[in-house]
Length: 461
Image (cartoon, rainbow, N blue to C red; front, top):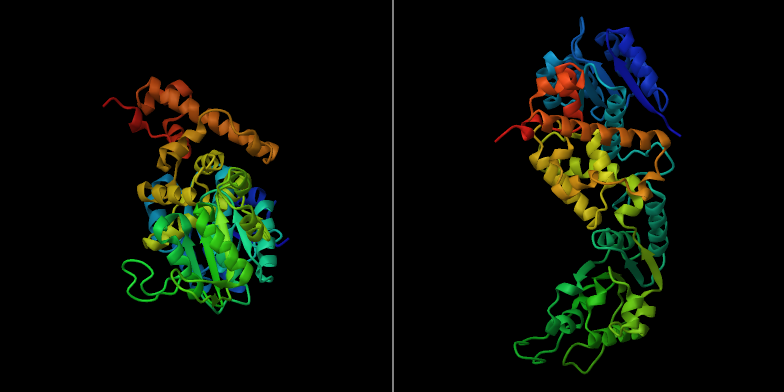
């Protein structure tokens, strides 16, 4: 297993030792006590992430950032700074730094920001993830066993010129999977035509799929080929095939059986050479039993079935997907992508995502739009996602966590609940709340920031 290469730069020996201990378990950590030494090291070998203090004698953090980025643009740089120089750290982010850590920082926060920096480097470079396999394949992102099983099936399906049936809830990536089958098949040089059967007007479905002859119906002033003919030699993707009317199902079944179609109003059949990939969020077996879907068509479609997992069935992929969408939409708006704080990531992982990956992407895009700082917090997430913090943690998620992570999650939830009740009691007055909590005002401010709690929300209107 390939270990990430981390360079830590600080003139304080205690900081170097702390980060070497915290990050050294999963990464190879090199330390430097001054900026010039760091620049020399970065010039002689490749590092995945550099953590550098902002203010140091000689070459400061800005110079380290400039030199590292000029020699290795894909290396991510994280600035470490005291409260008084946070503005400088933000300026460094505009110059290419990934994020910053405000001293004194929690070791867990350091681990989290490095993990996010490593993930961003991999997304940029498409380098292998530090485990068995890559994080993205066929446009489907993840490392969970569930998504790996889908990758394998799609690769097998691509090599076989047979009909494929993709099943799964709305938003699980069925069109991406269909495109993956086409792009890796012998038909890749021909057209891939996606069709949403549910969006076709009922009276025009047959004409759209199979075409029509001139004069076949009012308005048919010329002969028109259908989508099957348009996809000749390539792949026709029929999404939501369970929405097809029964009469059209009969014609579709015959087209698959005979390898020919007949335009509406025409007498002569047309030979076709098309690979069909179908998809549905419905239980087609149940639809067959209810008389809404033809049994013979079902068995002709389900030659090679592939079930795409719901997002709640691969929760371990949520942080990776969220980071990908954050970078994607930040890039579209030409802005530096922020990161997620720990509680926001845990909230994303705890939500059930009825809309699956599509809903997650929408939630991340919304969070990016409202985020005012350099970190996306819980308060930036949609209200229904925030509600995932309420109530007990789903058992299906807990059993996938290591003990320490489960305990940390429980601690974070209790901490946030405490802060909310505390600020409610003192109506957002941080000084009085800090006195009750038995801590310094600055310490309480750091906790509020970490857990995405804003004192202003509790002040009288």
